[in-house]
Length: 489
Image (cartoon, rainbow, N blue to C red; front, top):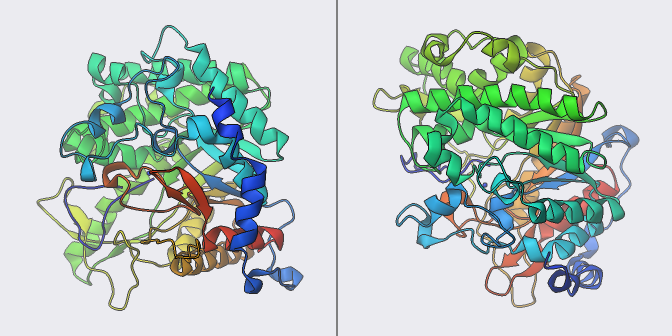
């Protein structure tokens, strides 16, 4: 997920085996802690049927491999660009790295138990490309696939549907060193090969596949602004990384369909409604350009087979014959990550001439500086309905960062997050009433985790993680969502 302080508008940006060790902290611990956390006012209420979500609505939580797994040097895993970036002095707050993170690689059983105890019927996780193909291609590391095999079986056994994301920003470092990573067209072919390998191993049980998580954010902050791995800068770099990820997505969709015909295939983008920071004509022009690079350069090639007019000329040098035909592929669903609107201004000194500006007076903010406005979620969903064919859509990430603290009695009362979630779930319900084909909602994130360039200083989780002891404690927001799921909204 994206990490950036929109209040401060800073140029350096933040944004998202071992079985015996995991078994000790499974179902019993989860049940005991959840019981302790439950408050009387959180008991299920009887809601009118018209306010509830459909019975087949998907309720889930999301995570990503580098942010939670740890075990970076175990079982043959190769280095990722985030391993190198996080170990580079000054790149991540407090010098934090994902070396241990939430130790999910060893504690996955406990984490899956929490999903089951919360009543979630789906879990979106990502596979780590360098855990499966340490060099990005060539020799397969079977122990990496074995881990995801165990995880998938553990989810299914507990009644939780696995949603597998193939890429959440942890590119094998070998590919970055050999050819520039996503600056190299050949990376698209290697990614398609990787997709096929994972599908051959897990496709008999995993039926929901997400190709990319937020290719737009990865290209902008990793290859354009340098605030994320691999730390490159420049508009041309951002454009090439954007186009090559779009291309890789199309090729991977081909590869997945070639492996199995029974897979449900989609992808995930971080989409924000873009609004002018003032009434000036300059800021209104900035909206078109910002929207073109942030949203349209990924939505339009996928759904319409062309880059948006506002940025098309700049993408032209990166496009080879046949690319747009490959990129425009049918999807079974579209995944939307939503956090906040973007109020933008003309900014000639910025990467593409438009950047975050002042927000309206009276706006609430999260601890990371993002404005809170649930109406933006409805706006984006309606945009998908009206301009992109009304696809079947899932909110695949939605959540908020607050400065959570554990009280003396062991509780974590994250009331602001509860309010944030309540407001956004209400916006999702309105979108369904407005004819949007919204089929599910995944919270970000199941666990407090390594939040990219912010390290461990920012918490988004439904479950509080003490990173020193690795103890998990459900927050009030976890209980709120568990009750929401139970009563279907």
